[in-house]
Image 1 (cartoon, rainbow, N blue to C red):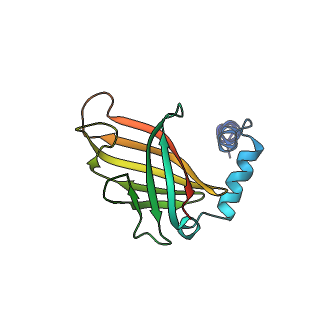
Image 2 (image 1 turned 135 degrees about the vertical axis):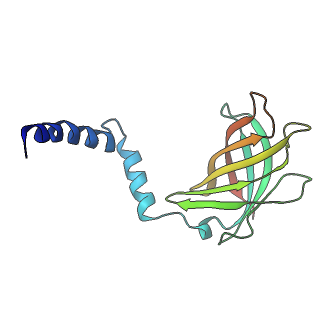
Length: 156
């Protein structure tokens, strides 16, 4: 190797390693990530009926609904009060997360608006399902996207 190649390797390799494993990353997060890789979440782990609450990031309750989860990718639904069930499509299952999507459907929050798509990420923490959501409305207004969190407990 010539001096230029060695010099580049000496500069680039430490940078790549620093990006791959940041020094400020908490050990607990690394352990959690490692545990998720060893024990990935399975659809059967969350199969059942769940009473869910959707909230904005301030913690204000936006909506309640029932999540029905099955041990495979078929039959997943969410049901808002006094509404028919909405089918959920499983987008992916990886590590500690299950990603679903549904839509379009009439908004439960905004009168005369439709939700074009609702994408949710579900994780199992203890005996609860927790996660986040992104709702995209059928509008060109600046507030066409809503982000929030959700939490749920099994219905017995």
